[in-house]
Image 1 (tube, rainbow, N blue to C red):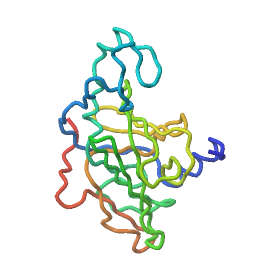
Image 2 (image 1 turned 120 degrees about the vertical axis):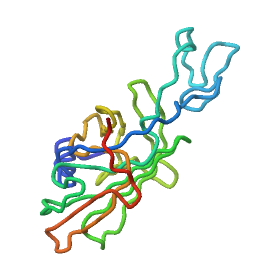
Image 3 (image 1 turned 180 degrees about the vertical axis):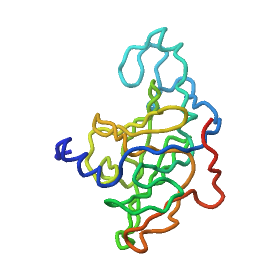
Image 4 (image 1 turned 180 degrees about the horizontal axis):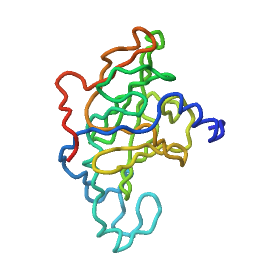
Length: 213
């Protein structure tokens, strides 16, 4: 990525601001790797004690518990302080609507929309790998030429972690994006900036708005 961190996140700020509360969590199964398979999906050699990545295996590694990714699996929407969910407010900057879907098969996708319908829907495709923390580490998915997030392409790294009871936040090139918090449930436009200075985003029909306990 050629843009400096300072200018990168200055531009990202235009797409959102500080977090707001309210979400729902659901218990989901623990993601467990197949026996004899590394976290990258590569087979390990039992005969020489070396994984397919060339890293020497140890007794501790073999006994390591699988990473619990249950908090990550599902559909999530972004929230920020400038556009509280379920409230019609005057829009400041360029409000965004993002829906993130993370699947247990190691793939994920996200859509991003702004007030301008002329810009359409920006779509992202990723593959993910679980790491202790817990973290999901993303790489470009099918059809992607580089690692992308929000308004930026050619990222060096993109990770997602848990915050509080059910919030998720992204880390982009080693820097958190604290003003965009992702919470369970799909969100939809209620008022897509019509008139252009008024906006409202809320849960899509059928989504349960019950906050996390």
